[in-house]
Image (cartoon, rainbow, N blue to C red; front, side, top):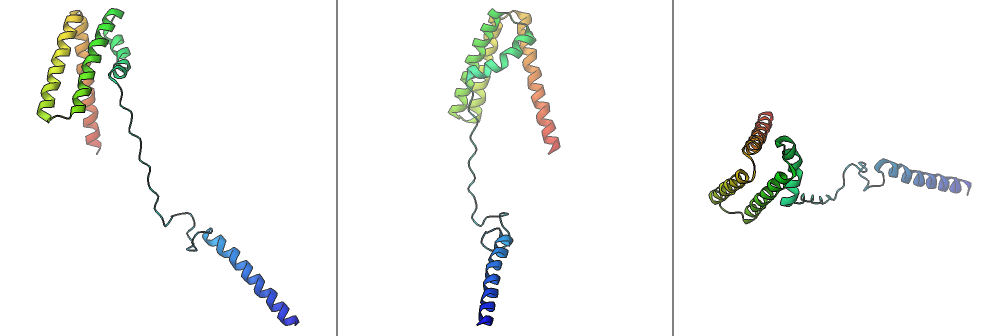
Amino acid sequence: MKIYLKSLIAILILVLSSVEINAQYGNGRSGNGYGRQRNSIPQAQTPQEEPKALTAEQIVDNEMPNITESVGLNPFEEAIVRTILTKSVQKRIELQILKLAPDKTREAMEKIVKEQEEELKEGLPEDKYEAFEKLQKERFKSKKKKKKKRKNKD
């Protein structure tokens, strides 16, 4: 009876300790020993939210402080430029929404740019109009340089 009791206690201790050892090895995950490193079930990726499209007014509001400072516009001229740019940006946004053929899109963009230039010529004094045009060209050149640098890095 003593031998039976001792062997029963020994077997019970072995069984209980082996469960603890097994749990430590696999961190309680499917017994393969890798724990939390990889799940056998792939996780679905949550789609990233698309950035909210800015309205024409918001785009112009972001650019106006820089334009006002570099060109030196007074409040009346600033209101004129803001109105013209808002109208022009709104037309460009509408054009992007329409998704026309590339050649028609290009023609429409050229028409929008010409209208914007004519309205700015009428609304601004010559020196301020020229300063505005110079600012636009400098921005366009700097964007091209950045794109070229990015292409060279790749």
